[in-house]
Image 1 (cartoon, rainbow, N blue to C red):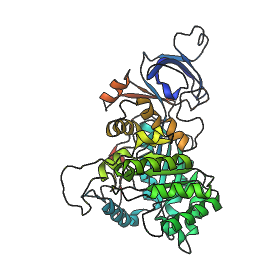
Image 2 (tube, helix red, strand yellow):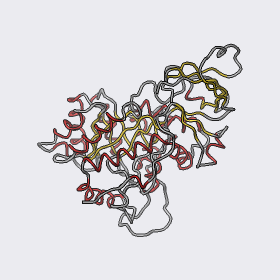
Image 3 (cartoon, one colour):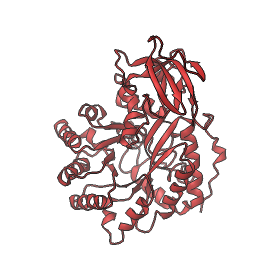
Image 4 (cartoon, rainbow, N blue to C red):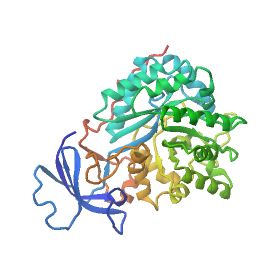
Length: 429
């Protein structure tokens, strides 16, 4: 990781540099020293890099991103599609299928699939990743131990964070404190869960946030992953955070239902989210896949909406927003490859971020790093991680026009070639 190199004529998304420019991209020279960005200077300033030493690469105006940050994934579920396919593509089918597949989740199975996933992520240019881990009162010890094994082995290559995942009501069971203990005994871990609208929701949220405060833990929740305008867990969470003055980071993922609510109601909820300091992560590809399907799993035809949340409105309100991979080749999402460039590309299309390319770029780099509280990641500034992803494209239009975009990785420990599927052989119990 300690490479040193100078890159001339690099086109950088201006939002990631801290520089001022009238265009979406700013042409710069970047000096990397011992694996860290030492300087970023606009081209044309005389004398700034006269004495650099080391290799010099002229990029000829090609676009450069920092290493990608994937703020919401599920390593424990990844690459299980072949043995647990969701043929109807329905949300609750996915939960049932993967609950049955858990009999296969041995240490060896979790480690093999997790290793393969991290190899894919790194090959595509990812340097940090947060995974949710299914757990319950009597389940999850092995999964967390497998994630810790991966975290230790990949420490110099991908920064790995973990979050517990269960129904939020589960935490109120007599033995459920063990869920928090098994999660938080490891570093870089957070409490999570999936709240659902019900008469006891406020009581469940109060208990959950008191528990998190007791442990001094940040939280990351799956919220309102549906097209029901009456689903307002996000609003209730924001009210709870404000009421309790909860002092730790709070992230809410999905929040799909926000997009189908009355505009005035949605905007008032966004105002509460901003006041509470809640961070939002959207999973555009997975929600494109899951949302808009008939609840009974039947065939209705063309979907009427595509599941993405109100990213423009959230960002305009000052809410920290990111996009991430979510599920990969499992019952919740049949495709994917832990490729954050694909997430960026599809996020622009799905959420109509084409007129805000710098916001879109930030959502898979700088914003995601801030969401994960990772200092010196996700930006192109002095002192930041020096691993760079260099594309062939010279403009955002070129970048987005060719999804099979050729890229070169600098400072990474891999060649940039994703592993072959044949290397992942899964046994079924």
